[in-house]
Amino acid sequence: MTESGTTVDIKALLRAQHIETPSWAYGNSGTRFKVFAQQGVPRDPYEKIADAAQVHLFTGVAPTVALHIPWDRVDDYADLARHAREAGVGIGAINSNVFQDDDYMLGSVTHPDARVRRKAIGHLLECVDIMDETGSDTLKLWFSDGINYPGQDDIRARQDRLAEALDEVYARLGPSQRFLLEYKLFEPAFYATDVPDWGTAYAHCLRLGPKAQVVVDTGHHAPGTNIEFIVAFLLREGKLGGFDFNSRFYADDDLMVGAADPFQLFRIMYEVVRGGGYSADVAFMLDQCHNIEPKIPGQIRSVMNVQEATAKALLVDRAALAAAQSAGDVLGANAVLMDAYNTDVRPLLAELREEMSLHPDPMGAYAASGYGAKIVAERVGGAQAGWGA
Ligand code: PSV
Ligand code: MN
Ligand code: MN
Image (cartoon, rainbow, N blue to C red; front, side, top):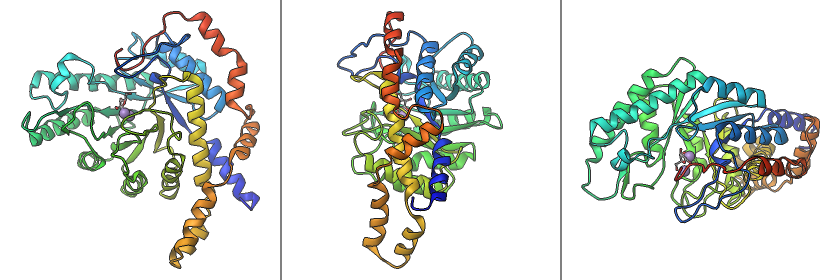
């Protein structure tokens, strides 16, 4: 950041950043032990979008909101998209849900019963219809499918069924549509999950073609996994479709991104920048639940955390790093990276916001806006998001 030219470039990149917030972050959520209801939460998808628009209003970099179907089911999706546009945001990824129906106890697209598989595929195709109606270009596929006991079902046959389902959905995609296949180590299946890791997701996507890519949910790995390696690898292969950002300490905690390990987030963002993934092709999405913290401020803080990690990643002196690396200067190379990580980028981001005609302090500006008090007064009986809905 010594030369002003570099600073200007970084600001231009940060200004163009696009971080998508999830509709389900705005409703009540909890664990399997308890959902703590908050006042003023949205009662329907229209109000979730209104809240997402607030996050964009105060940060300037959250212009889309992801939907989750059927949690966000409405009669008229074109109308919902129009409502979003009027509120100043767009509809982002359509997240499918083949995990909350009694029929799916033994799986959805990998279920041993063809009737259940057909029902699940029908839902995925319906999600593509919703993409057509809302103008969304991204379908997100996460399957809770798996088995709890050795011998419960045939692991290999389940892969065959998964491949058949993916073939059918892939064939239904329009020319400018894609799907992102999400992997998750475990839960709700505890013995063998059908898409447990990036390698499985990658192999299916590779077989299908360019409209199938992998999405990396940062909360879906075993402890100690080097996520930035996965990012670097997938980017090199043109198969990184995006992120579901969140933080984890133990399992799929869905805490605020950058809260548990801001250094890991920086390392991930550095590989994104390094690998040319800082483009419209790699979606930066949040997949979080705010169980004990207020929802809209939780999203604003999360967006800011991603921005800070991105700014630090963009600050890495790539030329100095390359020189140290090729000279075998281990400590020097590491120092280049750490210099960027240890830079306080908050003044830069405050300056950028002022240039974007935003308040330099989004958290404070939202708190002072009165929107929180307004929705508490106006909304009674807010909806539960996601789990248990
Ligand atoms: C599954 O744990 C997951 O990460 C998938 O993205 C789901 O769609 C989402 O969480 C629901 O919150
Ligand atoms: Mn996810
Ligand atoms: Mn998850």
